[in-house]
Length: 357
Ligand code: DNO
View (cartoon, rainbow, N blue to C red):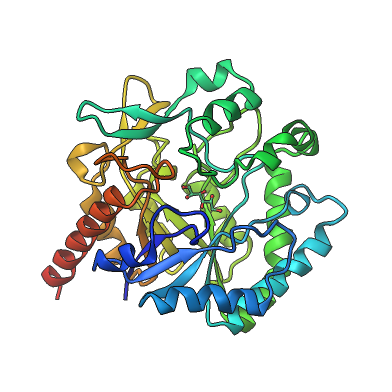
């Protein structure tokens, strides 16, 4: 059974409450994380249990973790990587013991997802996240961080934490000898090391693609297209090595045929992030749109249909929403537009299921 979920940043960080999420009626599961954990730290059983109990007390199900972050030592094969992998494995074991079986993570160097604007105004007055390559080409990562943190409505964007950005120069140094091949090799090493614990506790690892799907600030990015994701699937050919299929991330490259990619990943998609993008003049100039197909560039029905056809049965979530109805929240993660997205995706899904049975 596909399960509709919503990402939640925890009661200390999120403007949205579990009660509100439950009242959407469409959303049954929560995707969350222990927000204050640093990569390399073990998640203890009691901490995981408390997080789970809070979600369940609200009448929702804890459907998976986004993210258990992978340390830079693992990504760069630094001397501490084995220690960090051991901590990661212990965390997976503890999650499994608590009945949590899906873990989203990424393997992007230095930055997580990248946008150049967090509040671009659309004609209807809603605001959205946007990306413009020329802007990236003209600024330094530090400048980009300053402009982003000023636009966060007081929230912190994962991967862009101030503590992390304070070290941005050091981080770039760490990656100076890492090219795509080295990154692939380090990913393989990591996956091979954690597969035994994933099999034992049935943890489905779901790698999030790099967003945007090309190199930024000269850093290599590998989880960007069909060829590379299939290479990764074969490289460690175990169903526990799977993917988060994020349409908004793979979709940043118009060369990626999203339904075709979904079909090629049968049995390996453990989590789905579904949203739409609107492209402007150039290929590398886009903004996020409402989930509705006609508001953007993607055929959302074809995407849902492909998921249905491969028998997708994991958690799925509406992804970034527009900021509408004067909501003040973490850019991309307000309640209102994501709730509209969840309703729309559930509607598409119901009709696909009924027409095919
Ligand atoms: C953006 C998110 C990403 C994602 C991480 C997974 O909205 O989808 O930040 O959570 O890349 O580790």
